Image (cartoon, rainbow, N blue to C red):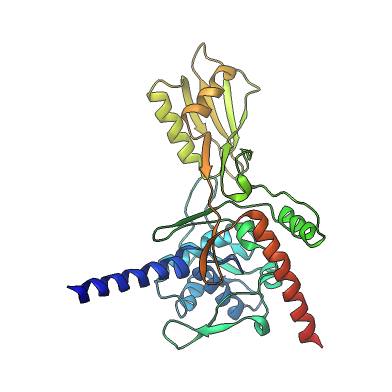
Length: 332
């Protein structure tokens, strides 16, 4: 029995360590999860300036990633929709509506110029054997910016989870510059879906934020939702409004969704009900307002570590100096 208990304990610890370090939690150094790192490595290897079928990239990436094509394809779409490190061609879905991307055989991608500037330097990148020993893959990219803050991240591991909100890349770079100059800086989230945010409880990346949809109430008989709160889609917002209406929380005549590249959801109000008196109910009983708890957990020096926004910026400011110094030494 003791042998079996020890066997289970060891196997569980190995599994937990694997999920934490090699699946769910991004690394502080380059801000990437292993599957994202392997996708970028594949794109760097295949880069010829032209677009590649996503299906081809997924197949090539399977040489490094031991978890099947579905996880690679979905991770590539999510990474491409961040609009930083992968150029897209074709239908990659819609972050506003929640529509899924087309099949990998129909869409194309290539590594962006920004990705090359931020990550790519083979002479400074430590490599290790892939899972089957047939290929070499990067341990970590020498990233020049705090990617984990730019893209954000979400992951559930064994006994721990991470929730890092995205930040405006220009504001992140300004904070890094201020840190290098020894000046004070503050950094708050910025969302690709727009909306409004209350950051009074952000606590440097380990508190919570309150996000709201942006509403147009200029017409007293209708309300237009023009920007979504982070984490919601037009479908989830409409479903929450329908649920609130059926429960008698709000009185509406109907909802129309005119969203394309921009969000536009029209809420027609019931007779005798006006926009000014309905706004609070929308925020109180629907997804138009949500509270998001954040937890800045990353892998630092091989171990999970909870950090603050300030600590991440300070770490990357020092890392940038080291990387630039090494690049200059290579030129000599």
